Image (cartoon, rainbow, N blue to C red; front, side, top):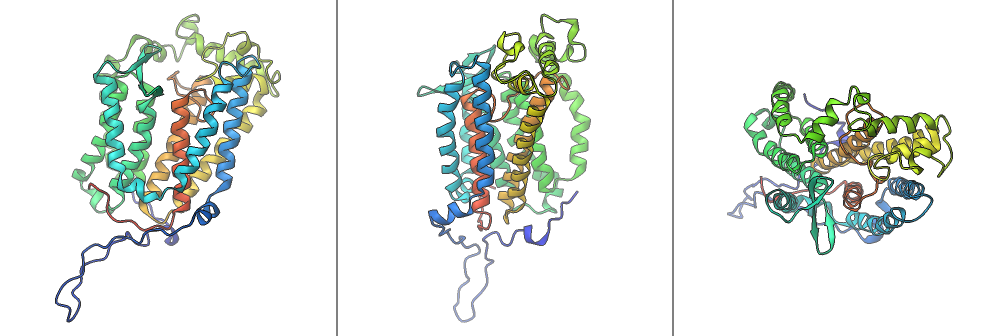
Length: 410
């Protein structure tokens, strides 16, 4: 499969100049020349900033704080106040990343990936990881608790965009060209699965597959992956923890274990159903306020919204997410360099998969896999990762016409 883009979306140059012999000069010009450095002023960058995208991020972040305020019993503690204190610096970080020349991430993409991979190795292979809810997924650095698996999805998107940036459609027809990017994906996915974190590992693979497809990888590769998947799934099943197996086996019949593995989804459906069309009112949800609903501030925050503001409120939130995702894809496709397009598509697809998985999970369409709702669910590390992703998308929009050389590694 080859994706044909309109002429105005095709790369207009990668910053390379072929060697040519200048008559009478007696020497050849360099084979490759460095691209012209951007001379954008701060004012010009702010002018190019897609403020509509920023506004959507602010609206979703504010909605998250409001829902956490309600879930906490109409109080700032224990969740809403902390979320707000993280939201403000998160927005500043997002805008700061947006102003950085996009070629910075291109030049150091593999180094960023390597650093995050090292953090995953530290968590899995040493005793430094912080254990929570039966899994070792966090790392405390200087008083800050970081979840490297969430940030690895960003590092992986950058690394894949670096690799595929200069690869032609013909080159990607060679299976050997896919060995390196496949290793980039599978190594962190296995490490994340060992934490254990099945949901994040799965989404990491699916988001990466989207980058492979959009870069021009042949369809037979995905067909082959589909054939191998059942065998890999069988191996993965044998390494799952008991609670993960219970989540999957009770998916089709949660009533079989209503007080155990099926409790979460049963309470979630009760809360969503009781909300009706317009809901019970802000802060008036019985399932959430009386603590029948588990993990109401993280994985099941969407259910709090559905119970209190009903179908109308849930649809409005999903509309905001849809607008943000459409805007993200638009930013990616309008980049005139392959790196920006692939990075933007990878980041936006990850965002889309998180929203889709969380909503499908809490409505009982898929098993409960512990995936938060972006910018809404409580959690500092996850929230920071999404702000960084949004900052990179803004940076792509601002620097959509930049020219690129080669990444540090090929």
